[in-house]
Image (tube, rainbow, N blue to C red; front, side, top):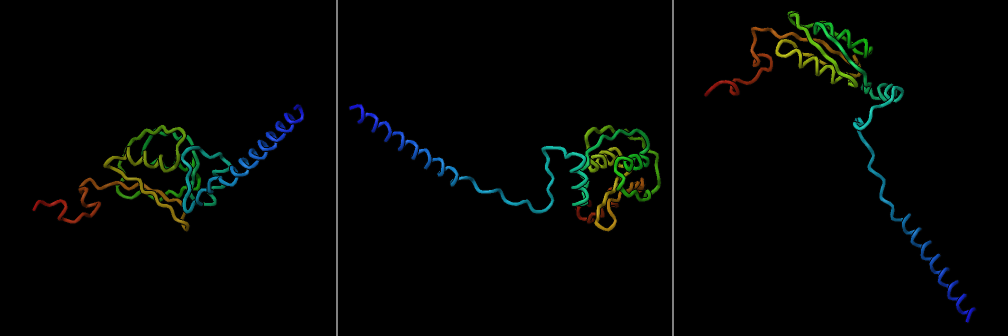
Length: 167
């Protein structure tokens, strides 16, 4: 009787081991598919890149992902020169329009070039616009365009008359 008990015990262990091996192999076969490849510009938004990876990415894609602190108080025209200190690749073009003194104050910790330019443009209000372009031949270009106070908003955007005239 004892030998029959040992035989049953050994058989159960063998079957258990075989079943666990089959289940383990079946789990490996049913793994999920790989995610699709990323095409085009890829900008992860959940983390800030380190300095080494941001330089590699900037040279590879010609887009700057540099994160920096920007603190400036003074005239809007001088803000671009202060920004060039943080981003030396920035090409500042001459000011367009009649220069009007316009004091601004910006304090942006952990920001990017695009966010700083957007903040400068917002503080320019209806007096000045910040124009930013980026191309492979000329790099990053930025300049300030002062608006003519005699012109209306429709003069700048050249809207069709049907949109702003009463019929």
